[in-house]
Length: 398
Ligand SMILES: *Cc1c(COP(=O)(O)O)cnc(C)c1O
Image 1 (spheres, helix red, strand yellow):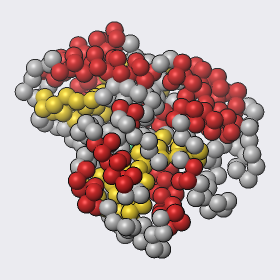
Image 2 (tube, rainbow, N blue to C red; image 1 turned 120 degrees about the horizontal axis):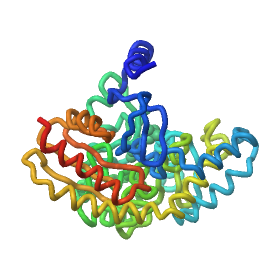
Image 3 (tube, protein in one colour; image 1 turned 90 degrees about the horizontal axis):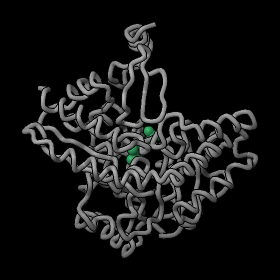
């Protein structure tokens, strides 16, 4: 079958909740993807940062194969030997006291919301069913009914109500608005340190520190969604490490499995996830030995191959190079680590189509932003190769 045959099948039998580029991928290796026609592409999305370690990393693949033949699922009705080892690794990379594994990112966000609410009732004496959580405009925290309840994106919400109450929205980066939104019923402030899906939006310097201090002053939990910004993407293990904060909870996912398998987790101080008693929360697949074995090696690869350091160094290099492109079509180039948004004065989709022709796979976000987020194993020469193509496409499209 050829590209068009697969596309026809997909369009006929699948739900149309995505608008993918017309390229059908068959194989991936490191930073490269190969389509069914044998054409090769540099992956500049890395599955929304789930494959920071590169496609089909051999060490993660070996661990997955070994575990798949030993034990894949017990449910948490019984213990398995991989889960405690993952707990220890998560503690060591983050310094957080305890953690709770889930599968998708959205599920981990839901878990953090439940923990924050219960913390509000049991530790802060918020009256029953009155707990509030403050979030930011243009947030992205996933697609469940509760999570889209506090989205500000029309497409994510329209037609999906009624929504879950108990959320207040403030502008991203606005500490004054945060202070004003806090009430005696506020349990938590949930925020992305850098807004990814919104178009790689970096808050003003000091925002996280000030927000953290306001939360501490008001006995409000400070919860970070690092599902996309964490695990090396923004040039540090966690994006919050650019500032002086000690979050009460951090949510991770995506690269936690190097793209092999959905694994997410909430990491927290003891008093936050400590609110859950047996039977109050769970997941059949959460914490399964296959996911845990994969996550352990995925984390090890990030550390051993110094992916956060590479992201910081090459991200800086690439950002400066991109800033040199002089074009009236470029509104702004911004980023941290190998997580760069190039905002155009017009729609980005045609540029992504052109970049595909040039052998690079990029995804637009919010209509006018092209994001560059390759696997973090990428090398300088490969970025130079990409730069030539990006420059050409910017200059000759439109
Ligand atoms: C991707 C993402 C999520 C949702 O993760 P899923 O695995 O798609 O459910 C939540 N928050 C942020 C910041 C993300 O980037």
